[in-house]
Image (cartoon, rainbow, N blue to C red; front, side, top):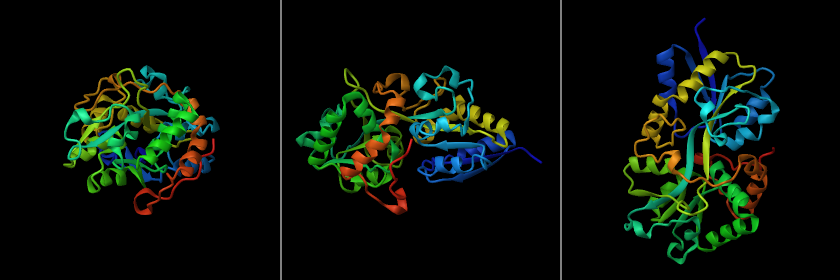
Amino acid sequence: MGKALRIYSGRNRPDLTPVYLLFERLTGVRTTVEKVYHHDAEKRVLAERADPQADLLLTNSQLALELVRETGVFEPYAAPVAKAYPEWLRAPDHSWLSFTAWPRAAMVNRTVLADSSAWPARLEDLTDARFRGAVACAALVEMTTVAQFAALRVVKGDAWTTGLIDRLLANGMRVYASNLRTREALARERKAVAIANSSNIHVFYLEGNPVGEAWLDQDGGMGTHVEAHTVALLAGAKHPAEARAFVDFLLSPEIQTLLARLFGETPVNAKAAHGPVRPLSEIKRMDAPLAKVAALIESTVTLLRDKGFDVRDDPVGGPSPPAPKG
């Protein structure tokens, strides 16, 4: 019987098929990938923990895995690259590892804001009258939206964050069902700015859309929120050696460079070629420890739902999630 690897992927856009194919063809490991809706991925592995049906879990959030880490469902793996990570890019015990970083930025519609001097420089700028009715944001179905506002609560406090949300909404910010719907609306409805992941900006630009990337709260500011897509080896995996080999492959300079080139994703391996993607070392991050952000996720979902962020669009975004349980 040949070597095999089974992966559950809660990260379904962008599609990692090129990475899976390269790994399979270079190593001879037969690789099977099952896509799982990202809000169901952790429930799936917890339900199967007595008899794991996958070897690895890939998903689109650090927080999602951190919230279930203490159940023991993951097998720690201190991959060589991850040993040099700053602490925020991995679980304390290496139970999960980040494989690309997803910083938040402003996606600017250059047909609306042709002069870059008019682009926002701070998140609070989006509450100005000049951006009235011109800002788009994804709904709470996107964990990066929830995580950003939870991080703001850590850094600036509840009153400030709630006030910011109220001011954004009073200024006409519109909420869309997903990151995909948000960037589509930026072009279709001629919005000026979308609050987005920087990789979304690169992907949309490469499709021929006239968008630009405005970095917020950098020089002297509070910094921007940075989430990450993650990988974890499942405890009791049937193919642990193949799983560890895939993690090493995913974190290699070659694949980190490929993800930057294909999808504009920010490498976590400093040896990767970044191309037009801003390196992590040049991004000022919000000082919001992951444990503190994780503790606020459930209440942030409730806050955003109460503010009208529970926007649904089943064909694209899937059902809106319940408040996650720690």
